[in-house]
Length: 342
Image 1 (cartoon, rainbow, N blue to C red):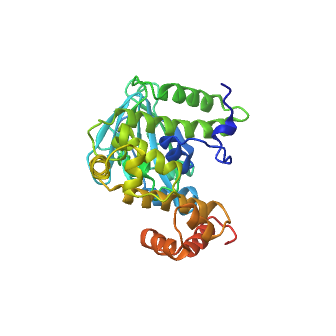
Image 2 (image 1 turned 90 degrees about the horizontal axis):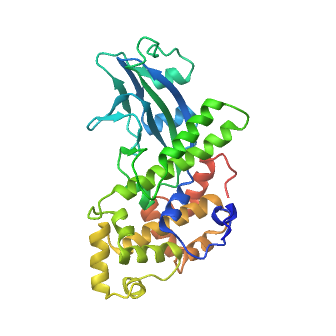
Image 3 (image 1 turned 90 degrees about the vertical axis):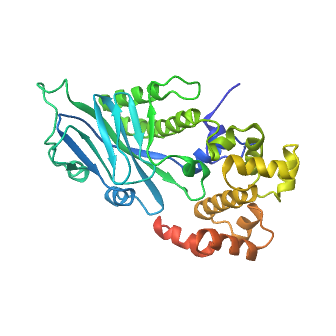
């Protein structure tokens, strides 16, 4: 079967079935940027600010979640978040700082940490590896992923604060090592079009890392990932994503999966840690935020698209979850993106 980019582009409306992971990944509108790729000799240390400060440093608009990632190409290093336990990363491992905490990367003791801000502004790398220390050095590829519409996104909420993945881990659902290898080669080549290619590869790298994490999560661990793996709950979640504007109820969802309402509600809540209708409400808010942000369609149309029979009911629900009425939220989002308010 011929597969074209049009099938997957977010500009097309020709979608007959919904893959829940596709849906949640696409809604994040992942982009990325490489910040540095260097080798360091021990003792060495780099500090990275939290997500908000990193976003301001890079000139990213408000409303975009900036998460740092670090890939160890060879050697090893320790990552220590501002609060929480440290972990050691070895060659072929990557960590994505989903939680957005400030953190430090280090190897060895008593090193004067270099702020990544100084390195990005052209400051000298005082801990650069040399020929005599190459056997002990660590090579890092560091960058950021920019995630959009993280509010009420169940995939984003299900990810750990520090998401650690191994590039070489065998699995059917990801090709991390292949993507990382191609990206490293492209960065090293630095020819015409490299920037565009690396940007696309960064999107794939982030998506592959998430898929690798999902594959590794134990089935018994409560949360969204357990829910999409459950054959019954997963079908219900898929139905919600396929048609968020449907007049969903516990009874209707239970009928969709051929189960009694009480047994279905219990199984759903046990898997996700929240009720079916809470999940419906949150996903509707995610869809509504994206529609309000990316289009000029009226609030009444958005309300109908996400299952509200009246604008008043939609306004109340939206303000309860988001903190602002839909029209006010849309105006603020437009200002954040330097667009003309609708």
